[in-house]
Length: 205
Ligand SMILES: Cc1cc2nc3c(=O)[nH]c(=O)nc-3n(C[C@H](O)[C@H](O)[C@H](O)COP(=O)(O)O)c2cc1C
Image 1 (cartoon, rainbow, N blue to C red):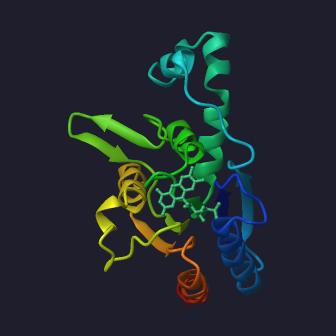
Image 2 (spheres, rainbow, N blue to C red):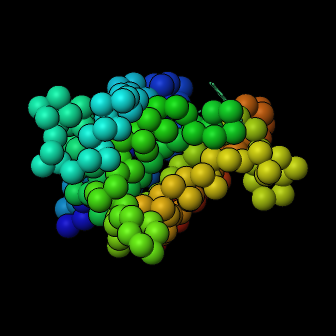
Image 3 (tube, rainbow, N blue to C red):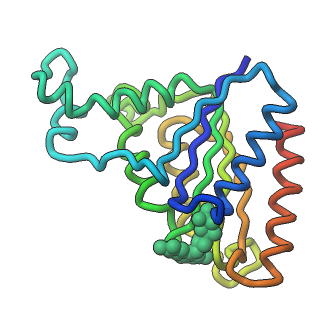
């Protein structure tokens, strides 16, 4: 049995393409692997908190030194990290906002990138602690940032996500980028390509 963590980050409901596509991946996966356990978190509609001063004090000091206030300040982060580490695989639905990820997804990343929990720091530098895991990241973009597009240099979303998840040790990441979703005819084509990519990946992942 594989434990999967499925996260959506669009604030939109029925109209969200990233949500619709990540759901399609999960439904197909469940049909093919009914024994797997899938946890779900909706940070688009139920955002996690931003880090604050007490969080920072708690995250960068040994837990055994924490006052009750510092324990409380880091509690949600601890729960999110526990949930993250309990998963073997990840499925993320992520809109492109201003050429990058929505702030809700960034707030989540700030909560789970934690020294001594998901990344270690020693004399050799940083070392990711989240090893042997795989991720599928399904993005939704209004414009076209595909390899042949003149706007590929504006895509800070896929490079950032590869970097930050690689930083904590997750390097096996498959991207399904649904481009051109605000571009009329191109949208239909893009969605059908994303759907085909989802079915292919379900068969191979
Ligand atoms: C605040 C905001 C910023 C956006 N920025 C971009 C952008 O930089 N590039 C782009 O191609 N589309 C941009 N879009 C369009 C979204 O990426 C597109 O609507 C996508 O489908 C949103 O994901 P969702 O359908 O899952 O909600 C933006 C949309 C919003 C609401």
